[in-house]
Amino acid sequence: MKEPEISIGIVNAKKIHFKLYTPFRMHNEIAEGEQTIAYEQGKILWKGEKYEELTFIPYEAQAFFELTDVVIGIHFHWERKEIQRFNGTLKFILSDETITAINIIRAESYLTSVISSEMSATASLEFLKAHAIISRSWLLKQIKERNNNSIQQTIIPPTIKNYELIRWYDNKSHTDFDVCADDHCQRYQGITKVFNKNAIDAIHSTHGQVLIYDNDICDARFSKCCGGITEEYETCWDNIQYPYLQSVYDNDTGNMSLSTEKEVETWIRNTYDCFCNTNSRHIISQILTDYDQETTDFYRWEAHYSQEELSTLISEKTKISFGKILDLIPIARGKSGRIYKLKIIGSEMELIIGKELEIRRILSKNHLLSSAFVIDKGPVGNGVPLWFKLTGAGWGHGVGLCQIGAAVMGERGYTYDQILHHYYKGTEIKKLY
Image 1 (spheres, helix red, strand yellow):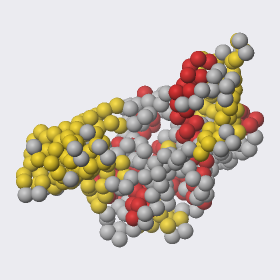
Image 2 (cartoon, one colour; image 1 turned 180 degrees about the horizontal axis):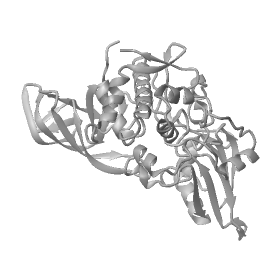
Image 3 (tube, rainbow, N blue to C red; image 1 turned 90 degrees about the vertical axis):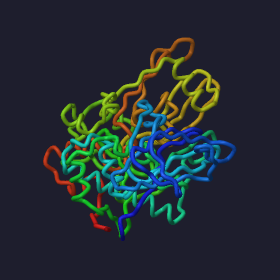
Image 4 (cartoon, helix red, strand yellow; image 1 turned 60 degrees about the horizontal axis):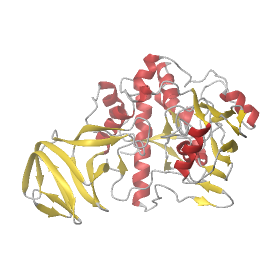
């Protein structure tokens, strides 16, 4: 297998501003400097001419371009716009009544950026090597499935049956490019972030290596902080069991059962000796980028709502009138304590919602840190609780590698293969190219 060339969707808008810092070729024309394209009557308008698509090919390897108004952290609490720079080819295509900017680049160059974009690249080399392998595995898995036409919808249409609304969100959805550049897939910010020696060494020393299970590339998921126990795939996405994405205790000394609501209550309301239970600013600053560090509590956290705040929030997110919220009841939890079915009882409506990201979406203006939480209710006034408090564990879906936990393992001297085999049971590391 040769190192693949991949396409990454960066920006989607009706008008896109960009700058070519070195000469690029578009058909037989040389382009350089400030540029603007716009959607007009089903075509891409550039310099007074209309096109079905535009492709700007660099003349030299070190050529780069800049895109303005790149949205990062879409729908999350850190969402913002940035100016970002990229190497490689720049392609524009039509997408409904907008234009999508696509960056085409070699896989290893993409991964070097991912390592520097997903986290601070000053983390330990062993952790970065582990992350390089799972990022490469995930990428090649997506390309393989896309080539096999096994594409899922980004948002699984909700099913409302017997008062249940079950929906999940996946990343196997892009039909015009291989992956997107945001958290929906993997963070990719081109050459915007500085590539330090550790990031480059991590990519070079693991060149072409992936995680394999039963002769197939692993769908190597990861999240910021598991909260002490990782989650299984089917709790968050389709009802499929991957043996290498089982629930593991984030320590090397034991395990813990969360099979009852009482055990979950005890687990979440307390703290334990887990890899991801760290307050070390040294480690956290290595792993979390500047805007990620705006989230200060992630191993254990709290969210508070007044009755009015919660009832308004749920109504706005579901487009359903529940009236006053009387109760939130966990119906089904995964092995990490993450809720994947939650019953909302209102004065006018009752509904079970799921899966985990839908619960996080409905109970927050952006996304709740995780669905591993327990519920406290305030005193009753006029027949309804005056407030609700959620006490939670972890940041993200919790499936696969826990970035904070893996970073701590790297700092403690664990090798990259030990880190990978801790989070992905029964896997092997194989060089594909």
